[in-house]
Image (cartoon, rainbow, N blue to C red; front, side):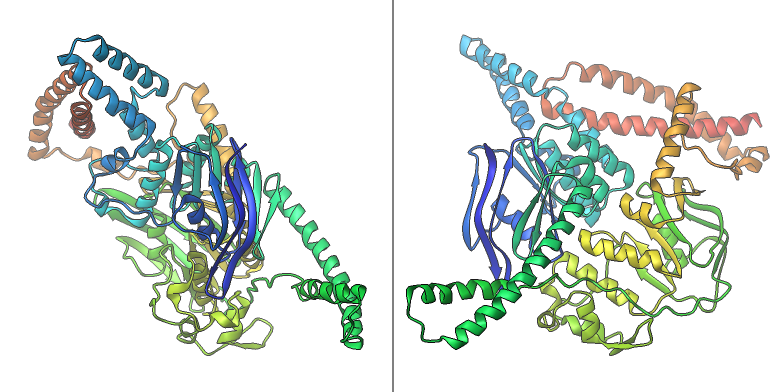
Amino acid sequence: MNLLSVESVSKSYGERVLFKDISFGLARGEKIALVARNGAGKSSLLNILYGRDVPDSGNVAIRRDLRISFLEQEPVFDESLTILEAVLVAETPASVAVREYEKALERAQEDFSDAAQEQMHRASERMDELQAWNFESDIKQTLARLGFTRFSQEVATLSGGQRKRLALAQVLLAQPELLILDEPTNHLDIDMIEWLENELMGRDMTLLLVTHDRYFLDSICTGIIELENQKIYHYAGGFEYYLEKKAERELADSASLEKAKNLYRRELEWVRKMPRARGTKAKSRVDAFDDVAEKAKGKKKEEELQLQVKMTRLGGKILELIRLRKNFGEQIILDGFDYTFKRGEKIGIVGKNGTGKSTLLNILLGLEPFDAGKIQTGETVVFGYYSQQGLIMQEDKRVIEVIKDIAEVFPLADGSKLSASQMLQRFLFMPHTHYSFVSTLSGGERRRLYLLTVLMKNPNFLILDEPTNDLDILTLGVLEDFLFDFPGCCLIVSHDRYFMDKLVDHLFVFEGAGKIRDFPGNYTQWRAKQTEEEKVLRKQGQQKQPVVAEPEIVVEAPAAKRKVSFKEKYEFEQLEKEIPTLESEKAALTEKMTHLSDHAELRDAAEKFAKLEKELEQKTMRWLELADLMEA
């Protein structure tokens, strides 16, 4: 029996038909990916399934009392809440069980009747059933996995990417029976994506997923439904199976179309010769003609995105980075980074969020100053920058005006030229959309338009910061083919492992603290190497840590030989007094927490404990630094 059934659903916006009479179902435990071109109606369909929108016709049947969670592309929060409060406010089975337990406990402390004790017993059993005793620690663990450490930070201060990750934490902690995810890997680093993969694979739930991440899709999903030409096509397999069967279907459709056209020509000739036919056979043949005509006028194949631009000639000298250094306060981003770029190489950049990947790109483009070192750029280098934020376009501007602001005519690699309108058509913007306002475009269509504005400048050094976000899988395939044959240089920051594996020659691995490792291989090869290194470390009984290809120069070593200042001596003495006091407070708070039963008090105590532990860790690290200086 299906948890959710879609029956003959249609949706249009004015004259634009998104889908017509589509039907499919989701059974318990199925994990299905929804694949479609940008603008085909994926997000609209998800909104209909979740009840945020209604279809023009048809019906969506959902099992009664089904717990559904929906991760949307633009999540909305109460701005006054903290990160922890935003997650706790959700009506999850565990949060309801905790509240019921608190009520039962409060009543049992004042009322010793059998009814009160029975309520307490039922509440305890429910807590056991849901394993909700560690509910708050589970929340904090999930938040930490998604990059949150300051749980008291207000939602109003979060960036767009942080909001998406917070919304992901919300839906995961809601423990739904049906989970709908719209591009869940956007704004996650690779470690987070791999953690999310394991989390979703290990859960007993039904999943409907929209993603452009093909490795993610292949790891999790048991089937694919494709929305194309306003219809739904079903594929019972992973991404490779989908590509194979889609090609077979298109080949069969092409053959059917040729047959339909031949039949149409014969029927058209007959209808013209016998316009006044009134016999039963003749009338039925005339009626059937409309069906044949509709099939014959169908498209053989949808138009494909064409990426073909004229690249500015690249000279002998391209780009050289010499001992680059960059800090943000005490955080080291670049620590003497050297590299000389060579013609035609494609380099991927990987690392956790916050290690400085985007900062390096901004430094290369002159958008961010660096503290020390030198950058030498060749005279013929023309950068093409595709930023993570995208192009900031005026909402009331028409699509063709965005293009004409750059140029009216564009040269191609084969020597021909195209008008602004022709370039838009090559990027799958049909003529009737050219004078539409930017505000009417979907997220993926905006990204496609932005990519066009970048390539139209004829760059020979492409810098791409998360280029795969919001692009559909089919457009990504065309972009990959274009970049594969691109003769210039390419520097790519992406969490899309499939995209990286297909394109890059080697990786810049940002390991933190300013260390950048140049790894000779793609993402999968790097992860395999990393796994081998971790196994060696475990065998040696060492703590897991980043392993570098060559010994790193420790810049701080000369500082250890200098004389300790009076101020540092005084700081060292004060720390020797403060650290034992903090350790005593931590021990007392730990003891107190074991006896707390009130959920609010326990939450406050846990927050205080986290702050105390962080302060103790900082002071201990500083004491160790000063102790080394004292011994030198």
